[in-house]
Length: 515
Image 1 (cartoon, rainbow, N blue to C red):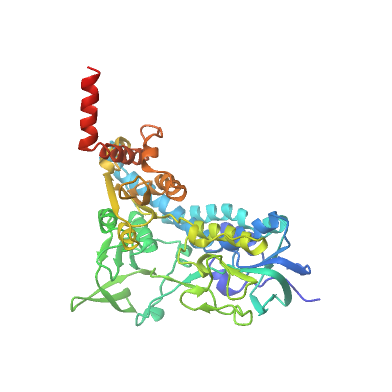
Image 2: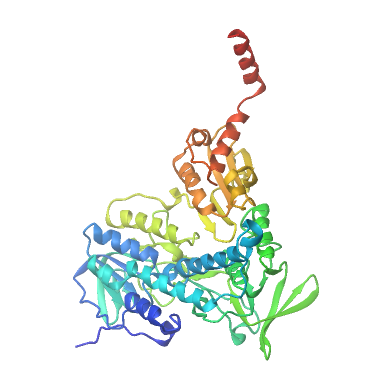
């Protein structure tokens, strides 16, 4: 009889280091070495390739509706979000914020003075412990109990309606490709030889690097640069843009950039990284800017400059599925590929590479693949948040985007300094910006810069998605004092703007009449 147990290769083991009790628990749940792949059950209604967020939601949703479902994962169930992304990074961010609050409590709030460097190893162990705990939700056993046939191994299309995994052929009516994306490194001379971390390997650290370098000023780079600075590393961030987070409004990015500087991050911006080499003193990063050359030596280097879709080695050609190595699997607005039996969702097929988007796209794919659904990806309103301190959260269109689409725009910007709770929390750096369709209270887009921007944004995301006008938000009672009160204040500001000179004149006449 063929052994259908999955192999745990050295590459996979390298991602769950150190191999302590927490990572052993993680591996046992998300890629159990003793797992025996089931015998294929006839033709499946749905075969899902990829066990990250998009794949898990697809498999669980379809099985919950009564479909025969198989799910294939070659690495760790839970994918990027659980193992190398949202979960571990936010665990570290919270610890770093705690360290920062302890150090600044005396000056800001009259609290006790904190001294010492803290225990970096304890921060990382806490992260691993919580990640293992959360991994129960994504475990092979849980999904098997939900009625999903879980196959661990490399899945590869062998035809338009067949997939092979671990020596077994799975026949399907419909399939969903949900293989995600992976970090990529730029072609910098000497980088591969010098060695570097990505988001997939960073969380294996157990000792704090005294000097920490980050190439990339996007969300991952900024989050980790600020966090490691708060945890005591001397951090240098390198980027070719003139400011961090170039996707955001410049003044929003400037608030975060100043906070990073205050936390000790040294920013080397508007430059080109010319080369990297390992020396006796560490990893030397050489750069050029304006015709001048410079270098910085660090003990550990994180590269966070982008991601590439996982499309290689799956036999997409055999299935007649069109794809591009840079942009991923090509899908239409209903998430169908060039093979109408096959759909694709998540980071492998979307420019919105967020966990919550993968979840939403998976729900659309289930409707369209298994039923006569006509749901469209373009109908989604996608919010996002960068979890720096303060956070930047956005939904809908930026002003430039709205004008390019032909909208006349009225923009309201309210500083957090006008919000009592922000002042009381000593967190008044930031603002709310709302873009309205001129002459109406329709919200086209919004940006929040605040300590809890991601939580504040939910109300605005609801408004943009369902067409709730800003004036209606003004009539909604918000608890006082909260930072989210800034949204109501924006509504009040809009309503005051409706008091035109003509309306005021009519009110004057009215009040003279009633004496």
